Length: 219
Image (cartoon, rainbow, N blue to C red; front, side, top):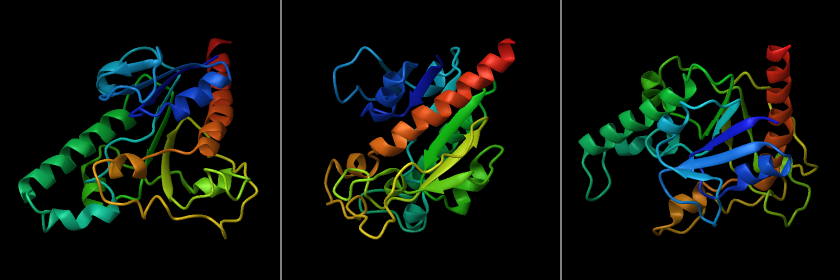
């Protein structure tokens, strides 16, 4: 089975989806895992990705300064912050995205992020438009389930196919709770949460693609 690195994840949702299908999956983040596990590496993904991996999926790289919804802070900083800090954080976020996107020795790479503004795109090395955008509800079947949410997610893919939708929902009953999360210390965590339906599709479809690529290279 594939050796998979799930970067910038503390929830373990994507990691556990790959583990459930027998892959050698590990998560990595600067923060500890939300739940006890021996499959989480606490550290900078740029250090960990230097090891041998068949597939790397970077699920929640810091996007506060990269995403289109936050571009206003680059011209008028929030209370208590400076514009220099905002632009410095943008440079840091773009550098992390660039390092992950351009990692040379991992054949299959996926990066998840919201829609980006032009300042971010200009700073990312070898930037390309996202391969696809998906919504959580496209991978869910239960109207009251966790996947029936609206959250446009962009996927940058290298060596991997676009995800095929696996759900039966049509979006008409999808909730908007992610965008309406209440202000507070944990708002960033609520807004960056991932969804089990997409995670399962990633493990099934990308795990198989990575395995096929590995088998072809070894033949």
